[in-house]
Length: 329
Ligand SMILES: NC(=O)c1ccc[n+]([C@@H]2O[C@H](COP(=O)([O-])OP(=O)(O)OC[C@H]3O[C@@H](n4cnc5c(N)ncnc54)[C@H](OP(=O)(O)O)[C@@H]3O)[C@@H](O)[C@H]2O)c1
Image 1 (cartoon, rainbow, N blue to C red):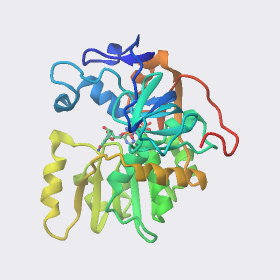
Image 2 (image 1 turned 180 degrees about the horizontal axis):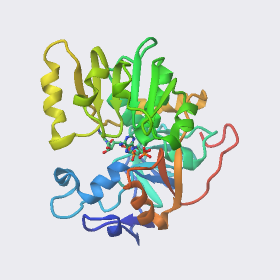
Image 3 (image 1 turned 45 degrees about the horizontal axis):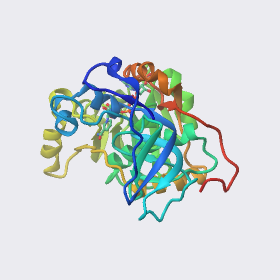
Image 4 (image 1 turned 30 degrees about the vertical axis):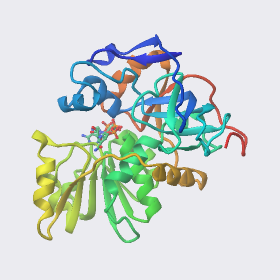
């Protein structure tokens, strides 16, 4: 089968399309013919081994996982003997650690994978799980019920667009911060207020929020603390300048003051099932910036690494388009 492989760590150019052996599913796994997958920021971190300690997971000298790709949508073509949840022909979507940037990938039925909502194209279905799982992990404990206020900084990214839509689902009042070109998009995702960071600095407008979520790792607790309500929480997606975020998270845990929390991404099947329900209820939609054929993975990756994509970047391998209701699942 065709797959995107890399044999050394480095820039996007270390990626290349190659013929590799088609995987065989284990007893509790399904084999999926991938129709669409994505390039996201985590793939880029694995490929460039940045920060350096990711080599602990991916191989010290060279990548043990040659095929990157976390998100997928496609069709089940084979099932292991212990698989009961999926059958051959089912259309699925989900997220895994590695191996989705390929024509076929195997995945455990207990992994964050579910039947694809029929109204979603394969491209759209490939572009929703990572942002949602990360946003839900980061916002866990933020108590986003009605009456609570959340500011999402970097609301136009993969995690940011998910956070805005999820927080609206939970009932919070959402202020989204993005640049001028994305104001209408984030408004259409449900944001109650939008701050265009090119024209206004939210830290100087006198407003305060119960939660500030830095969904793009570009702000800081220090600069935001006066915009937090008493007892408020600043949630960080990145380690911060000189990796200060974990230490500050520990320090602010003590006492009843404003807190910094470092979001740690977790991928849970329940979160993908929640996402499926939200999509089917019309409460969640995919945000896709660009779509490339698998062959153009290097170009797609270069674009993701600009840090300026809006939502998600998709790679396609085959059939796309929506199904008739009831098909596939
Ligand atoms: N904690 C975890 O487990 C975990 C896991 C994966 C990723 N991450 C981190 O999460 C962060 C977000 O990932 P992502 O995939 O959502 O990012 P992304 O999609 O690449 O974010 C890009 C978006 O952020 C906006 N942006 C860039 N610079 C900005 C700034 N200074 N102010 C406001 N908006 C800005 C961009 O719009 P404009 O530039 O046009 O404004 C663009 O729309 C990354 O830093 C990544 O390293 C954390």
